[in-house]
Image 1 (cartoon, rainbow, N blue to C red):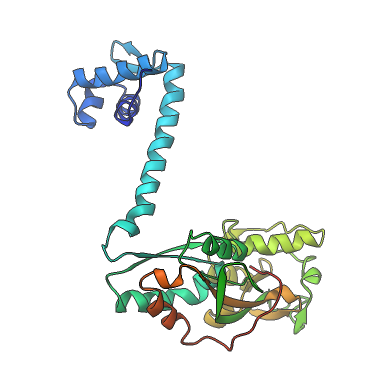
Image 2 (image 1 turned 45 degrees about the vertical axis):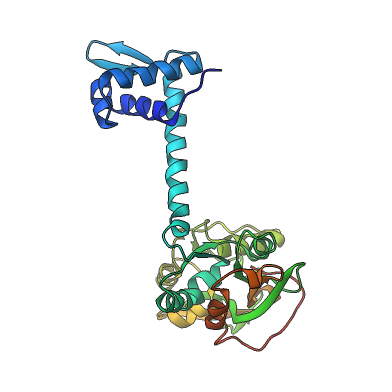
Length: 307
């Protein structure tokens, strides 16, 4: 079976962009005859003509457009792979794979991670954000060395250590009907207009799911990427929002009021998740755990799950 290479695809994409084979060859550091050979190899492998020669250059056939589209997708995947691998290839000493939910990732971990990286410059941390259920699952399946989330109760093969306590709260503009209340059930807030975090936020998806569980749907007036921006929109009267208690303590809340949520899921006990089988095998975990647990609350165990 005739095969093609990534180099063949690279030449085709260059030819598509440049609309000229000579310029395409120059772009990928080849002579024109070698570039032509790559195109010919690709056409023979795929069984279809990919380029049409014109007086002033070249043009993709319909088949060529399909191949070029896929070639660019492959190139984007390779670039993403290289970015994802970067933390694992920079230092010989290694990398700690950490996963965490939204609250831990944004409200608490930055200071702890910075401290660890300063004290141990030979180690990298690869941090990614996931829902609390997935955080624990990834640790159990050795797809992560350490996790932090709001999963409650036991999980096979995973041990837990306390990390932080926090809660989700409602912020509303001054003068809003809920502004005079100290606490409300989440369901009561759903008659108001919301401003929300981007849908890529794990915490925001969690809040949407809680609304759907009540048979309701949140239709945000706007999505933003950060809790600080969210608070600013609320202060200007654009809507109400759910944020973390840590964010409420950290940002300027002028023009808003905090209203506690009485729902049990609003209380978040953040815990460190470790594989009982691999904890001792993973180098550098002990000093990281020591930093993470310096300000931890007393240990508690409760059933259920949260984000």
